[in-house]
Amino acid sequence: MDRLLEVCVDSTFSLEAALEGGADRIELCSSLGEGGLTPSYGFMKLAKKISNIPVFALIRPRSGNFVYSKNELEIIFEDIEIAKALGADGIVCGFLNQNLEIDEALTLKAVKAASPLPFTFHRAIDVSVTSIKQSVKLLKEIGVKRILTSGKAKTAHEGLDNLKKLLEEANNEISILAGSGINSQNVTDLLNLGISEVHASCSSPFAQKYGSAIKMGAQEDSSTHTDINKVRALRRAISFDQKQ
Image (cartoon, rainbow, N blue to C red; front, side, top):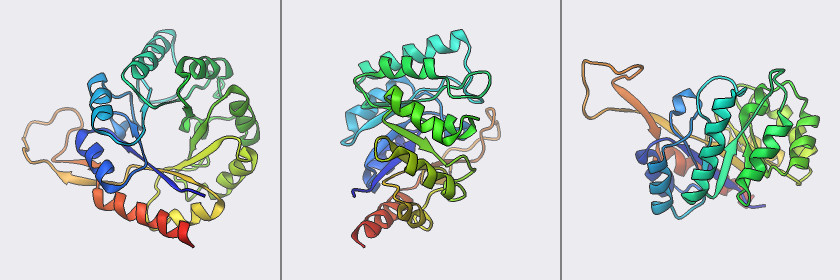
């Protein structure tokens, strides 16, 4: 079974590191410190220009929960259309209703809006009250191609038991993309379950070249970006496991 590494990036520095480090797919976003938000249109266009691997666009208009207002939904569906027009290879999004259940109607609408691009339902599933069995059944029926999940835990490694259940329910009819806290030291435990797609930021803090005493919001003297060495190490760990 082929092993695939998806790296989430929110800057050109991180994008370049992911590409050079051996990523198989990019999840393009902004503000990873807030869990990832929709990338700018210019970033989407540049990513498609320089990337030789698929680029999936995260569509998320704000941080916080996944229960969206009418105006936020208008933004989401407009962003899906723009991402498609800019050449995105896939769309990543997720919707919950006010009861924190997976919103079937909105997810179906988004899958149709994204078509013919593959649609990934992201980690909204991890904070949903919908059961694992019902979640997978519902998302398969809607036409979702993959689920990005930590197994309803803080990290994918802590969610191993639920990831196993997700794989069993998926039955190779929908891809399970494991994400959160994955690195070269713990990825083998995930792959041993049967996980074939892994999602990671492979990030490290980097000192800013041009510092300032004036801080903009949460700006610090260092920022976090994709670390090419961590990408390479995770890619090697996945490839090594595959050869066993």
